[in-house]
Amino acid sequence: MLRLYICYSCAFPFKSDENAQPAVCPGCGASPDNFLSEPYNEQEKRRIHVDPPIPDPNRDPMDLTYHVPKRFPKRTRHGRLRRFVLEYDCADTLKDFYTDIFGWDIINTEHSSKENPTMYCATGPGNPNWEPRVVSFTYGFMIPKSSDETGAHPLFMVEVDNIETTIKQVEKFGGKLLKPRFTVEGNDYAIIYDSEGNGLYLWETPSTVTWNEPESQTIE
Image (cartoon, rainbow, N blue to C red; front, side, top):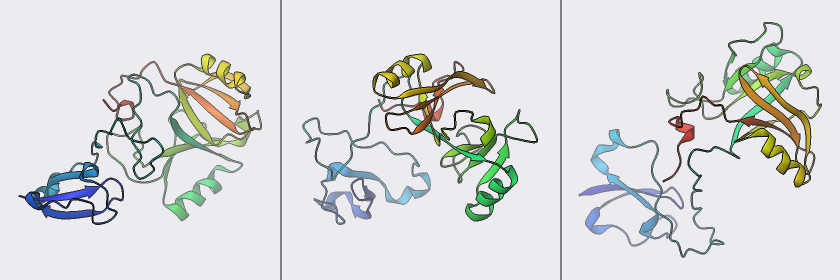
């Protein structure tokens, strides 16, 4: 049977009869353990998301030829980089910049003020069931500079299980709390400096999470 193979190490695609599968990847020489295999004549049914091969437990952790996927614990998204944040003086100017140059889709959030809106930025097409109302490869927010009284101008948002617990760890490892827990449109945040003075938003996982969302899935 003719099959389509894709190498995880170098992403090289090739077709071969399953009885004549190459001993190594034609692109990089990786072993067949790194191949995704699927029927060649069913390409319209190919999966967008594919399951990586099970890593060898005896693999040298310093071997960089293949990066083993991280196994997140169940029912937690703690530590994941979730959003980016861009600040503006003029909402229309910043919106036009990213819309006209990069083709982003940008809309005001549901409860934004007309004068100084918080805006969703979708950076590209995605799956229709992806988060939240805007489909994208990754997305972020545009907010007025005046809303950041810390002056840290944080660019990224990290999701955490518990804001207060995380702040204790931040301070223990040389970081600094700039703004304690605050709520915006039903979500709880805090602002910190890391140990080198980089500003970050902390976003606490909402209590409304069902753990069935695509971004809540973990590798079993």
